[in-house]
Amino acid sequence: MNAPKTISILNKKGGCTKSSVSVNLAAALANAGLQVVLVDSDSNRHSLKWFERAGLNPDYEATFKVVGLAALTRSLAGAEVVLIDTAAQISDDEIADYAASSDLAIVPIVPTIDCYGPTLETVEVLGKASAPYRLLLSSCPSRSPEAEMFRETLEGDGHGFFAANIRQSVGVPRSSLQGTTVEKMPKSLGGAGEDFAGLAAEVIEILEAG
Image (cartoon, rainbow, N blue to C red; front, side, top):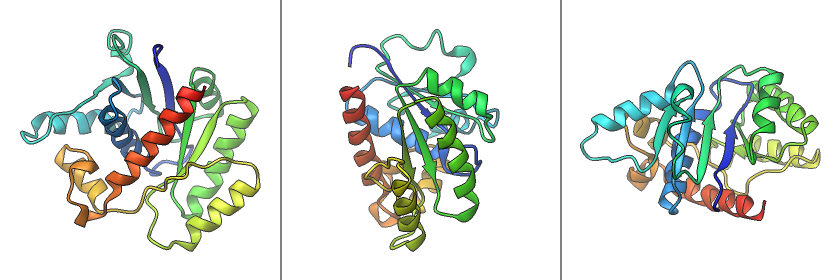
């Protein structure tokens, strides 16, 4: 991939793992050999705060940049992939704007009923914008009937999913607090690092095909 590719991580619902997906997908793409810049466009600055914690962790060295919107233009040199961690409670117009400037939109969905409606609203806007997008089941309990119901229902309505699910894992929030990424955590804490590696492989395949 010679030209930078842009991926937006978005959902109208706050608390649906956008920031944890953004950070850990950025790490997995970097581990796959890509130069990655993660842009934190959320006023809560979750990804930037993680990057600050990572800088204080002597046992971890980030393999990708995390920048705010103000620093974006001077941070793209050499980038192959730009990930955008978007704000919570994003508007339809903002979704459409991100869709127009992205090669792929990733919509994380946690298998809870309060996440379902906002996710439908999000993909409706993406569909109207003719944007390439995939749904990502995230923070999934093992053997979750809700997760499978969400997948079956939304796939039946024509919405595409990543094959990878991000399993529910205590390693994800713990890695965030420690300023590291989930693939650095012991597998005994859930093994979600493998899920992000699989997700990164799918993302790379989509970007190369596009």
